[in-house]
Image (cartoon, rainbow, N blue to C red; front, side, top):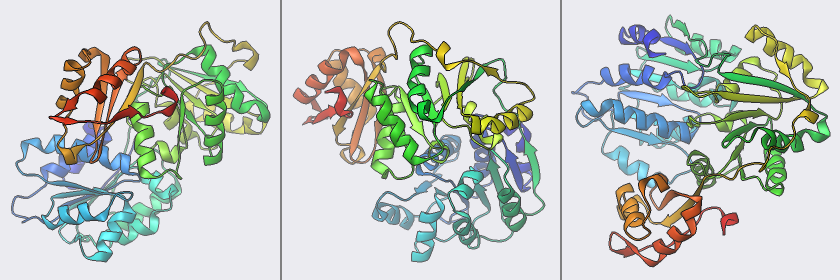
Length: 436
């Protein structure tokens, strides 16, 4: 996407960019944002990025830091809810060049007087459609009112509902529209429709998984309650499934996302809003437990699979009441969909495969100055594991999470509890109690 929008953003123009997940939108605004930072701003906030969720804000901040490595002493701060204010207040006291955060927490800092946006030259609304869905329009308005009217405003959205046009009219100056077609060709993603009765919908998900045997799947539900119900059904069938929806606290959300991203959870069940900001590139299958009435949202869901050179699979469970939604999807995609009978989906030998990794949680994180190399060193020296047997290592302020190949998890756990990291005893456990 950055190839299309960069000339406009570098000229200082306001831009509305519509593109699906995976199209490079973060780079599209990170490059001009960092390029426009001044060296004489004396710690004043020069750029602001608003995101709908903490997960997306963390990813954006990480990308900005990577882009800004060539610019000495560029400070990027993340301000999101779900974490204590004290650390954020201390960081703000030392100044920042770029602030990335959620509208509610940023408004909180503005009300407290701990944040000033009077020097902002560029404001970015990332995943603007999701922020509207989550009811952030008043918070967005209040936050942008603290920014100079002569700023540059960049708006990025996967879909283009009516609210986006209203937002652009209110806060942007002669915005230029950039639309990028989906990066996922029809030939890369096989889309199937399966007719189901309402009463068999949840159990049909397990039938789809047992037939196609994807190692990593993302199942979309339209409601939080259905997410909870589906996870209960799948877990009863022996499937390693976790749910991601709005009622989870931040620690629970973080742990769910870590387990799915490091391949120690086979199925993530999520609402559309909760899944925004999810950055997992190797999803084998998307299952639409409900058909969304918005065809653009359907395209966005399906685009989660079939990334890069991989082939993707998208299966939608359709009741008679949802047939009209399928017609809208076919009209938008310009082709008829492929149908398969539920009865034709028979379990393949071995059923749903277990996730290849297991997540171990270690007490202690950045506050104890633990680094990924320390964890890898302990697993190598104490447990004899090779780099291929250790997956992603995630470190937050107070805990460390490491993915270990399933066959070696019990051995690694015992050795970690018997050994030391940075000269200190550590307490390790399975993050998922079901692994015990």
